[in-house]
Amino acid sequence: MSFYKKIPLLAKLVLAIVLGIILGSALPTSIIRIFVTFSSIFSSFLGFTIPLIIVGFIVPGISQVSNNAGKLLGLSTGVAYISTLIAGTFAFLVAKLVLPSILANATLQTFQNPEDLMLKGYIDFKMTPIFDVTTALIISFILGIGISAIKSEGLKQGFNDFGEIIEKLLSTVIIPLLPFYILGVFMNITASGEVFKILKIFIMVFVVILILHLIIIIIQYTIAGSVNGKNPIKMLVNIIPAYMTAIGTQSSAATIPVTLRSTKKMGVDKNIANFTIPLFATIHLSGSTITLTTCATAVYWLQNGAAFPSTAVMIKFVILLGVTMVAAPGVPGGGVMAALGLLQSVLGFNEIMLSLMIALYITQDSFGTACNISGDGALSAIVDKLNQTFFKKEKQEV
Image (tube, rainbow, N blue to C red):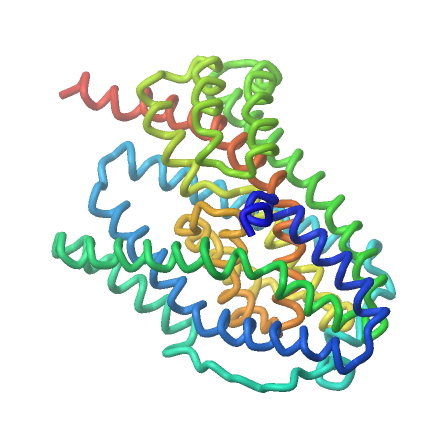
């Protein structure tokens, strides 16, 4: 068991997919249904926890940002959120332009009629959430803003503790069990006869995501360089060590020391960098937003017979996703776990679609993390310039 714990989550996920294909092809239906039963129960439990995850992360996130509100914190948070919105919008526009040619004739019956093609578990164990996702979001906003408004340290600490409980649930129960969940799902998909179509789609979407990551990084540094009058290429070269470290660690938090050193080499004020880099490691997830938006658009296309979500639906999704990413937990796969509620409520994803979103997201999580932290350096340079232009100027005038 200790050996299993040391295996990276990505390796576990890849192994689960491979074993799912092999076992789904070789085992009789009666055995496959045992694994499907586990996946079905786990999926029900996951659905039960989604509203709790939203409340557990968004309430402390909003109350913390608001309660500590200073000009620099407000500026940094605003820059991070705008960057996330730009990344999500950019991803959707590119996906809408590129995916039709990539996914031509790639609609899947498994997505459109899962009840007809997919095996059912031996036990149907339903866990009804205490409230739906929309209610969870509304409650989170009311409580987060309210706690800040009345400056209730007791409530704030209570929800901080609740958030820690949910994060513990994620890191010790849900995330470790994800490979077994994916195993059952892929055994079921293999039995349905469409697994190789899905793998082909995985690869194509993965390539698009990596290209989008690189483009958004270039855009971020072009803007940062223009604002500061610096060469964006030199700034990009400085962030490479942090990018490579993030790929290896798959953690924005673990990469903070390298990101901090790389950002200071760009000429960002050390006091600004010391403040923004740890903050952005938590609230700025432009790479993760690109991944989730692109994958969601592709999966929606497959489910709805070569149709994209409406622009209004995607605007709603991206706006809410930006808030969700600010509050997402800092554990591998945390971004997609926090976004499951939106995928379900806004885009109407079913169990199979959610499981594929998890698999797609975690497969590229290292590169998504690398994109996130690379953008942190560019945003820190932007915040540094805005701080010098507006806040320091205010002090001098006073």
